[in-house]
Length: 130
Image: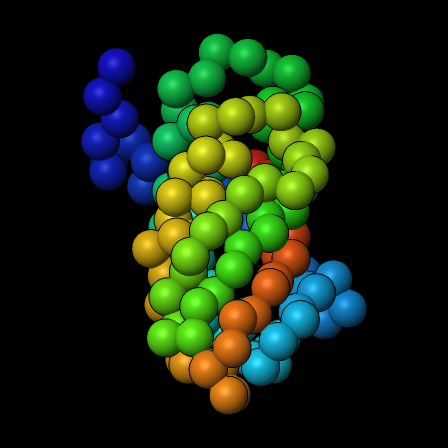
């Protein structure tokens, strides 16, 4: 079933920002800069969740809310080279796959020294008001 933008716009969704220690970065970019880039593209991640909610008939709590920790690698030119789910309490593979696809489309500033940057970033998804 096609889920158009009107249906998605009616669903309220919350993506909780991770606390600073929750973002783990190894390499030449500060965690706050990575957080800002991801927040600037928050609608892409929100869309992943809202689309899955609209298509899901599973009312189970672990399919409606939870955490997805994404591990991704930023190349020397700022492009995301890879992104995988490291852990997830949100039992929804469609959301996990979509979040990783969205992460691979992001671009970050070039890391200092042009080296690789390994990042672990948690997303917490839940329907708004719950």
